[in-house]
Length: 138
Image (cartoon, rainbow, N blue to C red; front, side):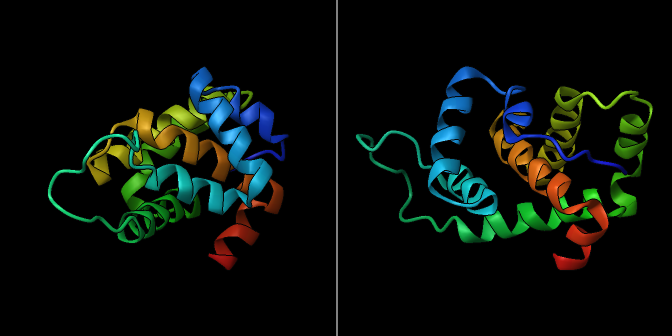
C-alpha cells in the first residue's frame, strides 16, 4: 500500500464543509493524532444531557487506532478492501478515505461519515512518515 505525502488540505478536501472547518481548527492547535482523537471523542452539543452516564472516549480511540493500524499495515482482515484501493490509479484521496472509513466502520460499528475526518488526518500523517515507518512506530 502506497500513501503519498500530500498536504493536509488535500486529504481533508474530501470531507463535508463542517468537518473540514473543524479539522482545520483542531490541526492548528494540536498534532494529527490528537486531532483524530478529539474528533472521535466529540460528544455533540454541550447543551444536551447525555444518556446513560459518563463515557470515556479512550477505549474507542484505542480500538479505532488498532483497526486503522491493521488496515494500513497489511492485516488479512482488510485484504479485500486494500485490493479495492490497489485498483485505483492514480490514488484518489476521496476513495481512500471512503473505503477505509467504511471498512473500519463495519468492524467498529460506526458510520463511515463519523470516522472519515479521523481517517483523512491519519492518512496525511502516514503519508508524511511513510507506511513502513508508521507501521514500525505504531
